[in-house]
Structure formats: C-alpha cells, structure tokens
Image 1 (spheres, protein in one colour):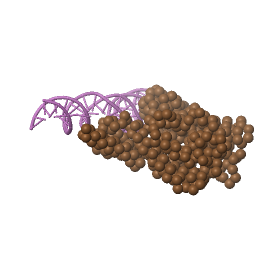
Image 2: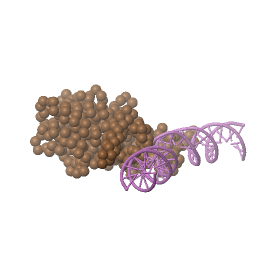
Image 3: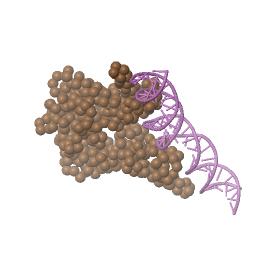
Image 4: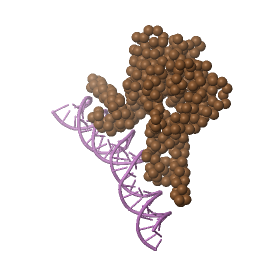
Amino acid sequence: MSVQERKARERAVRERLIVATARELAEQQGWDAVTTRRLAERIEYSQPVLYSHFRGKREIIGAVALEGAAEMAAAVRAATSVADGPRARVVALARAYLDFAARNPAVYDALFQLDGGLAYAQEDTPEPLKDAFAALMESLAEVAGDGVEPGLFTEVFWASLHGIATLTRAGRLLPEYAEQRVELLVDRLAVL
Amino acid sequence: MSVQERKARERAVRERLIVATARELAEQQGWDAVTTRRLAERIEYSQPVLYSHFRGKREIIGAVALEGAAEMAAAVRAATSVADGPRARVVALARAYLDFAARNPAVYDALFQLDGGLAYAQEDTPEPLKDAFAALMESLAEVAGDGVEPGLFTEVFWASLHGIATLTRAGRLLPEYAEQRVELLVDRLAVL
DNA sequence: ACTCGGATCCTAGCACCGCTAGACAATCAA
DNA sequence: TTGATTGTCTAGCGGTGCTAGGATCCGAGT
C-alpha cells in the first residue's frame, strides 16, 4: 500500500512541476515559447510524460489558469479586506485586479485569452473560477445600487476591468491615463 | 507604361483576393484554419505568392483588421446618426459595437485578440484604427461629463464594451443579461 | 521576327509544432 | 527467480510558417 502511495505522491509532485514550469516559461518568454518539447526538456523528462498527466497542451494551460484564479481571488480579497468603506474597497479591488493582470500576464492570458478547455458561467465550472468571481462579487454587491442584481453588476464591472487590462497590455490605451481610468470607472459605475 | 499599370492593377486585385479569402476562411472555420497552405489553395496560387504580397501571416491578419476597423467605424456612425438625443446615441453605439463583434468574430479577433503587427495609440497608428476610435469619441464626447477628457472617457467606455464583447463570446457571461448589461453600462458611465 | 533578360511563379524542403505507437527497462508479486 | 505490469523513451506522423532555387513566361530591343 505504502509503495503505491509513494508513487502517487511522486506523480503529484511531478504534475505540479509541469504546471509550475509551464507558467514560468510562459511568464519568461510568452506562451508561444511553451512547446511540449521545451517543456519536457525543462522538467527533464521526455514529451510523452506530459501526456500521462494531461490530455494535451490545452489542459496544461487550463491548470495554470486554475492556479492563477485562486491567486487572483486571494489577491483581491487581501486588498479589499484592508480597505475602509465601500469606495475604498472597490478602488482596492480594481487596482488589485489590474495589478494582478499586469504582473502575471501569462497567467492572465491562460485565464482569459487562451483556450484552456475550461467551462465558464455554468454548472460544471471549476471551483477556483467560481470562487474568483465570488471574490469580486463580495465587494461589488454593496455598490451595485438599488434594484440591480449583484451578479449583473459584477459581470459589467468585471468586463470593464478585463477590457482595460487587455487593451492596456496590448498597448492600445494611453499609459498616462491608467490611474484616471480606475477613478472614472469606480466613480461612475459604483453607487456609493 | 500601360503594361506595368495593368500588372500593378492585377497585383492589387490579387492582394484584395488574399485578404478577402483569409477573412472568409476565418469567419467560416476560425483563424486556426487559416493556414498559408489552405489560403494559397483557395486563391489558386502557391504559398510563396502570399509572401510576395505580405511579410507573413501576421501581416495578412493585420490587413483583415484594417478592413474591419473601417467597417466598424462605418457601422457605429450609421447607428449613431439615426438616433435622437445623447442617450439614444450612446445606446445605439454600444449596440452597434457589440453587434459588430458578434457578427464578425474573426474580424474582431484580428483587430483585438490576435497579433496583426499593428501599432495602437501612437503616432504611426494606421489611419483606419485612429478613425474607428474617432467614430466612438464623436458620440461619447457629449456624455463624458464636466471636467472629464473625452479621450479618457472614450477609452474607458470602449474598454468596457471590449470586455463585454470578448467575455460574451468566450461564454464567460450569462447570456440572459446581455441587454441589461448595455443599459447598465450606458446609464452609469454616461452623464446624460 | 527573334532572341535575350528580367519578372513571376512553383516545386521542394527546412525547422519546428502537437501528439502517439511501439520498443525497452525497471519494478513489483508470486 | 521468474513473469507481468508499470513506467519511460526513441522515433515518427502529419501538420505549421516560411524560403531557396530552378523553371517558365513575356515584354523589350535589335
């Protein structure tokens, strides 16, 4: 019995190594550089080993995405928990979100730009994704305004942040407006 | 002289054929299906011909993006021009934008998701892109509110639309809220 | 009218991609 | 110790974007 447990443990370690290495490589050189060959070489195993853990490259991206979703949820909760008052909380949320996207571009891509084979806004959506959305809603619900469903408001606020995050990173928005965009978004969208 | 002119004309025709075919193929089967081999086969020339018109696949995507930017600008202007009053104009703009993204997913991807090798928000930004932004600003400037720069407001409003467009298409937002999202966005962001 | 030279195009191939079949080695059970 | 099972690797398939080099065509000049 113990032998099997040891093997299962070692497999789990290797799986985490694969995900961590993929993420690291993506953060360093972009997802285009994350090929199964390079990834295999970095973990010092042959290519087929990757396929004994994941169905394919897509699932590896998905694993990075789930890891990132958990971190983002934690980052948002950490930021909002130390803020006083509704407005400060929403500002903290927005900054934390955009900061996470800027600091972890590859993870953000895995979450929202690439196809990680994950289901969203459905029954079978993985728990970390639902929880990340919940983390946003916790602080946003209180500023949704009367008669506006918190879920709807969260979707719109989140979409706005997502738009700003992606367009900023693609160099499509003027850098000097960064802070003012957050202020404008919060002051207009949130009902304080 | 006339001979050279005829050749130049034929080359221009073929170039338009390449772009149109790439777009068509992308709309039908997604950009993944747009390979240089398939594209070459569809235009009934060999692969290297593509490279006598464009530096590579990226530039072909960029050409589709520019074509799309012009169409989007026209669609937005057409929608806003027949609307009465500021609010109706902004609603028309939002609907036209999201409608364009939904009806031309491949073109929208070429514009904002894929790397078409285009410069944005800079001096050397191609004219169609600047003009598309201008088309948005024309209707949005009047609802930016006192003391808010039209450019800044347009960026934020546009980013919100972009976020809704991409997240909707990725199946990350609840479909039943579609119309309410537009209403909420307009009523909150725009100063009427 | 005929050849020459340059423009134009295609065949073939490079290095790389994601993914997998099948041979081989290591490990455990009897 | 033997046999089976598990684990891993080598090698290769069909695909990708892109390009070198040879063939072919066609207008220009004698």
